[in-house]
Length: 298
Image: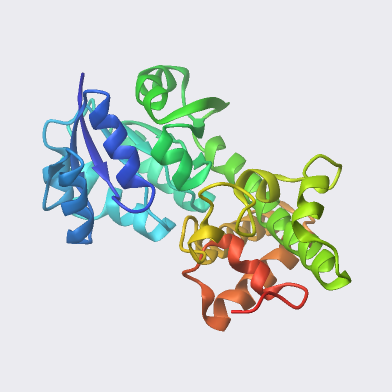
């Protein structure tokens, strides 16, 4: 087993780092929020006070943070990963970020002799807890082979999408579709509600019919739909509406940069931007149903 530096002990990083510990790895954990580091220590990680400490003796460094600016800071700032990791350390960023940052950070890592992967994940906090994440890795063949043992601990559906950079590109497209589908599920359920249908019966029918999608049947939009879903905990995240807005923004940046037309993606971004501006950014993404088609009572 190996020593892993883990940077970013949030809703995703905490259960992911805990699963690596359970698999027998030594995990040196760091986060800018001291309470998160304390929780990681309680889960069996070694608490550290800086990125440099987290990298000390690590054979691999894994990061998962919210935004591209955070990734730049983690890797490129003085005392960051590129300054602190040993030259043969494998670098794995599992954040979902903009492609410009992916290419900039990977370029800097490559110039200093590091093997670096982009490996964003899907299936949210439930997948992180259960070790059933979808992992979407852009990597060289050699880098993917080195990372695969860690991926096997963290996920069950692991894909090598091609060269470095293609993992994040794939995830951006996926999450644009996810954002659209959350709104689609919310609109269908609220239309059923306002027409006067039995919404539980409607869910039972549509989940077996052509209108089904993952937010509806795999994630759950309303209490009682999917056991343990955020809707059953007053829409505590989970995956926040703010993160969905961010990912939809990334999709629109990518579309504009590459001449793609994504009108539904643009509309989904507008909806989530309005929802977040209304004060609900830290609720779970599925709570957008409160904002759609007349919404739900608070």
